[in-house]
Amino acid sequence: MLDAFRSDLPQAPDQWTPAPEYSFVGGHNDAASVPFAGLAEALTNAMRREGQKLAFYNLGGSPLGYEPLRKFVIGEIGARAGIAGDPDNVLIVSGSLQALDLVCDAMLSPGDIVLIEQATYGGMISRLQGRGVAYRGIELDSGGIDLDHLRQVLTELIAAGTPPRLLYTIPTVQNPTGSVMPLERRRELLDLAREFGLPIFEDECYADLTWGCERPPSLRALDGDGGQVIYCGSFSKSLAPALRVGYLVADAPVIRQLLALKTDAGTGSLEQLALAEYCPSNFTDHVERLIEVLKEKSAAMVDAVRSEFGTDIVVEAPMGGIYVWLTFPDGTDTGSFAAAAMDAGIQFTPGAGWSSDPDWGKRRLRLCFGAPSVEAIRSGVKRLAEVYRTSL
Image (cartoon, rainbow, N blue to C red; front, side):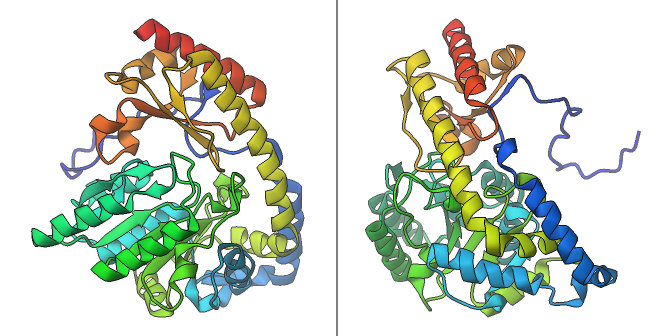
C-alpha cells in the first residue's frame, strides 16, 4: 500500500454506501422540482449556437466565467439581492465551496482569527481548521448576529492585539437556523464593521428561497461603494445541487485577485451554457414553484417534530431554505444517538460540527427537508423520536 501521504491529512472517508431510508443530511433538494427538461432544452440550444467554442478553455472568453451568465447574475439575481454592478464584479465558481476556498486563500494565514456565527456552515469551520485559522463564535438570536456580543468580542480581540481578519455571516436564511436578519440590524452591522475595519464575507446561498418575510437587501447592496463586503451565491440550492455553479460578487480588483487563485482552468462550461440560456426566461417562475414545495415540506417537518418529540425540544419554523434546527434539553449529546439512528435507517447532522463551540452545539441537530417527501418526513421524524427516547 502507498505510504507517502503527508501526516496531517484528514481521515479518509469510509467506502461510499447508499443513503438510508430517511436521509435528512446534506444540501439535497426536491428531485421533482429540478427543471431538467428546461435545462436540457436550454443546453441543446446553447450548444447548437456556441458548441464549437468548447474547443477553448472558458469558451474562448473571460476566465471570470461565461459573460451571459455573469450578466444574469449581476442583473436579475443581483437585483433580487439589491446589488448593482457589472459583469466584471462577478466570478463564476464551482459551487459555493470553491468560493469559500478562494476567499480563505486570499485573506487568511495560519494563526489568524475569523469571526463566525455561533451556529454556522460546517464547511466553513472545516476550512478554517484546515488552514490553522482560529475562530470565535458570535451569539445568535432570532434576527441573526447579536451586535452587542459582536462589539464585545471585537473590543476584546483588538485590545489583545489580535484583530480578526474577517466576519463570515449568513444573514438571509441562515444555515442551520433558518433565520433572516432584519434590515435595520444589517445597517447597524455594516456601521459596526466600518467602525472596526472588519471585512465581511456574506454567504447568501439560500437567499433565493426566502418565504417567511420579505427578503431584505443584502449586506453587499447596503454597503454601496464601501468595499466592505464580498458576496457569495449559488445555483445549487435554487436549481440543482449537482450543477456545482456558484458566484462571487465584489469590487473588480477583489474579483481579479480571487481569480489569480482560481487554478482550475475554469468552471464547467456546459453548466454555464445551460444556466445562461435557461435562467433569463425561467429562473423566477422556477424559484416561486420550488418555494411552494419547500414551504409545505418545512411545515410538515416542524409539525412532526413538535408532535413526536414534545415540548422538551425547541424548533423554530425556518424563514426559508431546506433545514430545521432542533435544540434538545441540557445534557443531551445528539451525536450519541447518531449511530443508533443510522441503524434504524435515519441520518441526521449532529450540531457539534455546525457550531463554533462544539459543547454548545452538541445538544442541537439539523434536519434537511429538501429531498424527502412529506410522507417520508413524517414517518422519519417519528422513527427518529423513537430512537431518541430509547437513548435516554
